[in-house]
Amino acid sequence: MSVVRRDAERRSQLAVLLAVVLAAVSWGLLSSVALAQSAAAHVARARAAEESFQLDRAAEAYRAGIEAEPSSRAAHVARRRLAWLEERAEGGFGPLVALERARRATTLDRTAFEATVDAMPRGLVRRESLELLASAHAAVGDTAAAERALRQWLAEASAPSERERATAILARLVSVEEPEEAERLLEAADLGESDTAREIDFERQVRVARPLALGALGLAALMMSIAAGTRWASLENLRALARPGTLLLGFWLAGAPLLVAMRYDPSTQDTFVRLAASMLGLFVIAQLVARALRGAARWRRAVAACAVLVAHVAMGYLVLLASGTTLGILGP
Image (cartoon, rainbow, N blue to C red; front, side):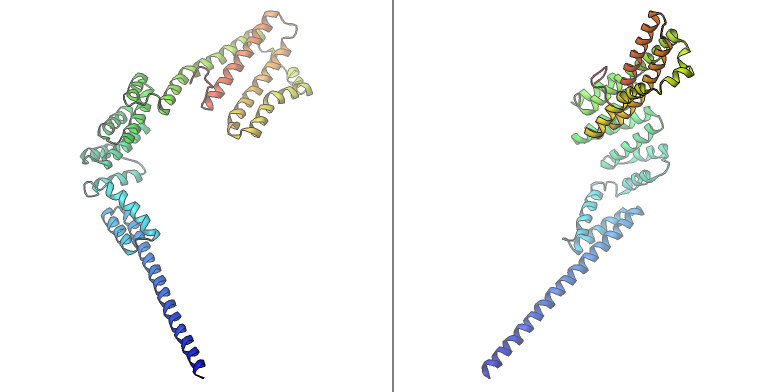
């Protein structure tokens, strides 16, 4: 009996111990959940305060969320937002409130905002405000005001990455009217070989090459008119396009490259769609002109052939420009 009694007492003690452990664990879990919920509630209040531009209250709520449960997910969010706010706390959050209101404005009063920016103390918020102001000026075509704001931003920027971004934006702005100034700005910032420099150079060369390509198309049309007049657009010639051989050749010229692009490099599909559409149109015109000039003088056929060749080269180049590349032909 004594052995049975001792076993019963041990089981009773183990049961009590297990109950205590489970109670402690449950209490810890419930406390952790409660603290995490409290932290999340503080973060929610902070976000609401940010939405209403009460940034000082938002910062306090984020701090409370961190203190409530430092290891919770809400606390991690609170730390990031609090760091963002504290980095922009110059002037007691007043400048940041003005910037946030400007960012959310449907229509920005550029004159009033410029006066607000001028009154801001130097710091990150003022520099971000100058960037926003420059963007607003540029959006309405006021390049002089945009350049003024960008130069102010560049003069106040201290971090190398920020100076590079400001320089790149300024260079893009002035490149249309003053390409030499854009080049000087990039070289001074050691960005002469940067992507921005290459893009500006590409855009500059495109501004020259596009009118040349369009002029070549106009010249081809003039040559075609001299060689064939309007005889090529006859109904008989149009019917002849429906012949199987002509249709097969047209499909081969326009459809085969597009199918290859779709199969092996989908990223080039937009380029090949433009190229197929333009080449198919020129193929139709070439077929019509060729039929109209059967038996015509040799010089007429030669002029028409040259016109078709010029038109194909010019159209192909325009397609490349529309796709953002020239494969090194008359451009980067």
